Length: 67
View 1 (cartoon, rainbow, N blue to C red):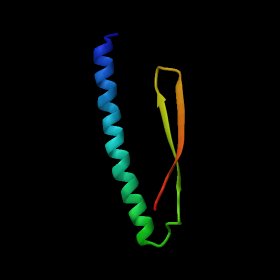
View 2 (cartoon, one colour; view 1 turned 30 degrees about the horizontal axis):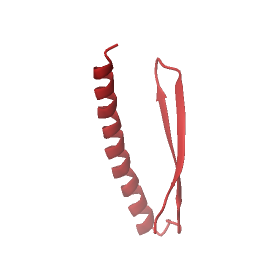
View 3 (cartoon, rainbow, N blue to C red; view 1 turned 60 degrees about the vertical axis):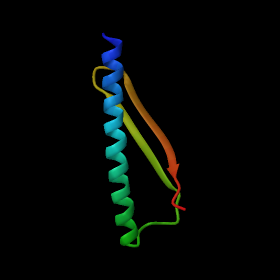
């Protein structure tokens, strides 16, 4: 395995994940607000990561403040 290639590829993937998930999260929150379904917050969130071929099954939990 080439560590530099692995590192760059991992960073590229994580950048894509960050941009995509932020965009989709924002759209979902704005839609919920428009529909009157958005509570006072914070939003409880969970991100799951699994990797085929590697023993990794990770869940990261947190909260997103609304105000």
